[in-house]
Structure formats: structure tokens, C-alpha cells
Image (cartoon, rainbow, N blue to C red; front, side, top):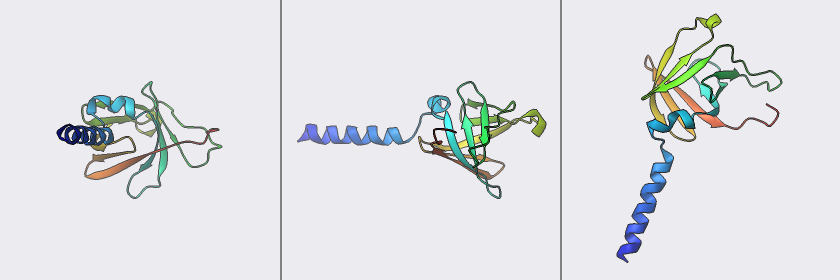
Length: 124
């Protein structure tokens, strides 16, 4: 009975650790498409690529993803975003409040930004 209790406790601890992502793994786990919600702005699709580029896509999947010089990186507990030079090119640091496989919440200047994982259609 004691072994069963320990095994159950270990399984529960492992399951809870799968829900959250360690900061050392943020860069690997952020790759992909996310629905980005910024208060008082329309939601959009943000796609993080392995090469450190990121793109924006609106909901019209007939239009191509717009990357134009956008860059991203993770430094400790911050998501560092650089928009294209035409949009000021000013780098922003979003503090990572929470990070899981399905949702990321960041904060910049007191504003929370949420990213929710999504799957793009095959032709996107």
C-alpha cells in the first residue's frame, strides 16, 4: 500500500510539472502559431519560428504571413520582441508571467498580453 501511495504521489507531481514549462525550455516550446490578445487591439495570429524570426497573420489565410525583419528571443523570464524597421524597429521586453504548452501570459508596462496556442489550417 505504501508503494502505491508513493507511486501515485510521483505520478501526480510529474503530471503537474508537464503543465508548466521550465524557463530553460521557453525557446523550444514557443515555436508555432499563437492567437495574440492585446487589450484594446484586434486579436491576431503570431507565429514564432526556430530561426528567431516571427510573423504576423490576420484571419485571412489567403494572405501570406508578414515577417519583414521581425525578430524574437528569450532571455531568462522575458520575451524580447523586435518589430520590423518600418514599424519603428524598437525592441520590447515582455516579462513572462506564466508559460504553459497552451498559453503564455506576458506583461509590458502594466498591460497583460496573452498568447493561446493554435493550429493553422494545412494550406496556411
